[in-house]
Amino acid sequence: MVLYWKQFVFENGDPADKLFIVLGHPRNNACLTVKATSQQKWRHRDEGCHIENGYFFVRGGDKERWFDCNTWIILEQPYLFRCDAIKGAIDSGQAVVKTNLIARFMSELRNCLKRSDDISEEQLAHLN
Image (tube, rainbow, N blue to C red; front, side):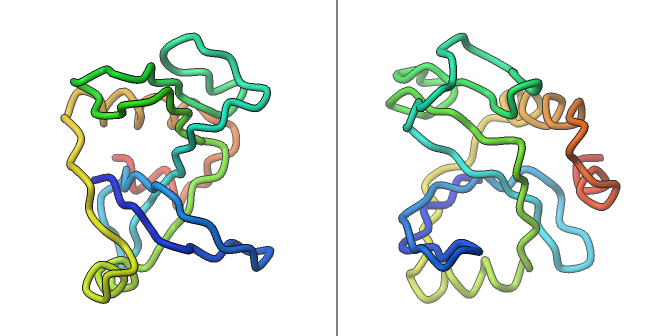
């Protein structure tokens, strides 16, 4: 599931509109998510998994993968959200479900993240 979260407040207190992908299976009222961005910065534009650099690149216009512009899915900072907080944000209109990604693409993202040295055991449990 892809969520568009209006004015999401990060740990540093800065708000920004963000896309999150719910990657994992809910466990103990927690959902594993990762951010998506269209800002290239230092990242390469080679399609696929770049876990050594902490991202997965999707070329814009790939209808099967939904994103209409070049998108970097940031895997180096997965977020665990309370599932009821996500539901509350959706119910209040603060977050909007944009789409559900196809299973094959979700599997690619999960398999890429599983190869990360930065993923905790708790986060990894959401991917299995």
